[in-house]
Length: 309
Image (cartoon, rainbow, N blue to C red):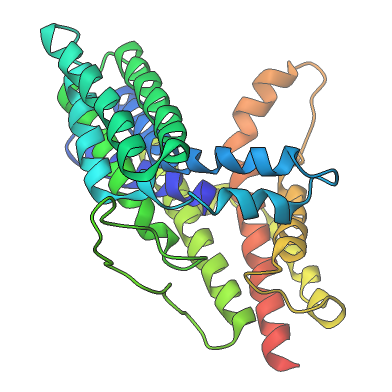
C-alpha cells in the first residue's frame, strides 16, 4: 500500500477541490501535496535500513525485522496526525505563529522520545523533518496555511486505514494505551485470495486516482486505455506453475504481475521528428492507463485460474 496511500489522498483532494470549482492548477497542487503527506507516515521504515545494512546478505527479512519494531506506530497514530496537521497549519503562516508551529513539531519529537524511547525519537525526527519540508513545498505552491493544513490532515488521517488489510493494524490511538483495531481485516479465509483481494483494493485506489487526474485535466479514462492491455491475460497460467502467494511470500507475484504492466509503457508510435520529451508527455496518460489496465487484466486472469484449479 505504499503507493496507494498517496494516490488515495490525491484522488480525494483532487475530486473535492475540483467539485468546489477551484482553478485546475491549484487543484493539481493541493492534490499532489495531500498525496505526499499521505506517504509521510511510512518514513518509520527508515529504521529498517539499519537492520538491512547490518546483515551481510541484505535480505528482505532483515529489513522488515528491524523496520517492524516501529512500523505503524507513532507516525500512523490519529492523535499524532491531528497534532501534526495543526502544527503544519501554524508553520505555513510565515509569521509569528510559525515559530509556535515549529515548536509544536519539536515537542512531538521530545514527547516521542520520552514516552517510547530513543528509537521512536529518531523516527519522529525524520517524520517532523518531512512535515517541515512539505510545508515548504506548500509555500512554493503558494497555498494558504488553511489549505496546507487541510492537505496534511487528509493525507495523515487516511493513511493508517489503508494498512488494515496487510500486516499488523496500526496503533491508531498511540501514544494512548487503547487498541482501536486488534487484528487486520481479513478479506478471505484463503491466504492467497486475501492477498489477491488486497491487491485488488490497491488497484482500485490507483484507478480512482487516474480517474481523478483525468477529470481534472478534461480527459476520459476509457479513451486512454489501449488494446495492448489485453496482453495481461497471458499472465493467468502463471498460477499453474508458481507457488501460491500469501502476505508472507508475496514478492514474486507482485513484482512479476507489475512487470507485465511494462507492456503498456511502450509508446505506440515514434516520430523521429518530435523530441522524445514531448512524445512522452503527450502519450504519458495513455501509457499509464494502458499499463494499469494490463496489470488489472493480469491479476484478474491469475485469480480466475487460481479459483479454477
